[in-house]
Image 1 (tube, rainbow, N blue to C red):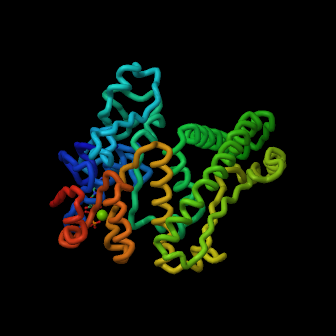
Image 2 (cartoon, rainbow, N blue to C red):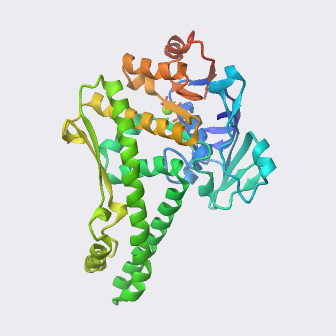
Image 3 (cartoon, rainbow, N blue to C red):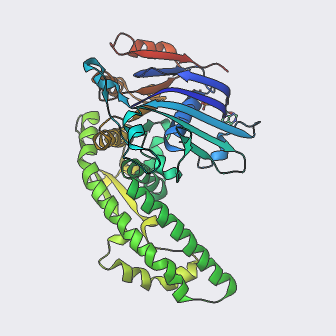
Length: 389
Ligand SMILES: Nc1ncnc2c1ncn2[C@@H]1O[C@H](COP(=O)(O)OP(=O)(O)OP(=O)(O)O)[C@@H](O)[C@H]1O
Ligand SMILES: [Mg+2]
């Protein structure tokens, strides 16, 4: 799969602009603040219907504008095999919205995402709206490496849950549906707890209307996260050991209250605490993933280089799992990585571009001469885009 072209209207710093991409390596160069990251973010938006930077969709609308639109055309052809004639992978399963014939013959998809200030965003595939936007997630998989990635190590558990939920949502649509349902139930239960406190009464039966399904869906998330980490960990360790020359032992431990012997009972016993706190104090929304290096917390004891290798290994493991599950590689967005990595790690990533592990890649760099030096003469098609103010 690759992104052929993208058109932006009032997306962040872009007024109206279109780009036609190479199916392999695309370098976005330009001075600081010209909109290189914004272009990567637009690609991310097209693939995942949200910004990689902010949770608030409206922040992606240009300051002066009332609406924004991102439109792009994905080809489902796997360019890694183009030497042997294009091998075509059609990724989606048949849906009620499309006839069998159109699925079989459709090797291109036009995705249009638009947003009017104060309204809900619209996501169209081939000019038809999805029944639910979540159906789009995972169809056009993407992995992004950015300078903020180490937040996942340094910040609280929410950042780690967000990361793993994002990884799993692209891999498994059932997981995404369960997660959305869990979040809805949690919101409803919390507002009920708040209401009880405000009005000074309690209705346990009414509370259970939300508690029981919350526990049920929470256990599904627990099982899925557990299963996922089991598969993810060996792949992650392999990448970490390649990046770091296998000098340290790394671990990732999934911690969840839902793993308790009889979680439903534990949850019920916690009711008084929930009522006092006016929110749900235990459950899957409190899960954490503990990162360790040589038996110690990575956040406290890992060096900067070790933390950097850790997050790159997380992303490479995500890339490998997506490639395996979808049978084609995701898009890879590399934001300013040449600034952050040493020569050996850069070389490892470049090797993966050349050997076909990576398919279509987007790289930003404020120093074009460095990118030319690293990427020209590799035998891989490289297209340059210079962004000016
Ligand atoms: N909603 C918005 N409307 C208008 N401009 C915006 C909006 N959001 C961000 N910008 C502008 O986009 C610019 C930053 O763009 P971007 O982060 O893509 O730069 P960059 O080329 O990646 O720079 P650097 O090399 O420093 O990483 C800033 O000038 C910022 O004000
Ligand atoms: Mg940038």
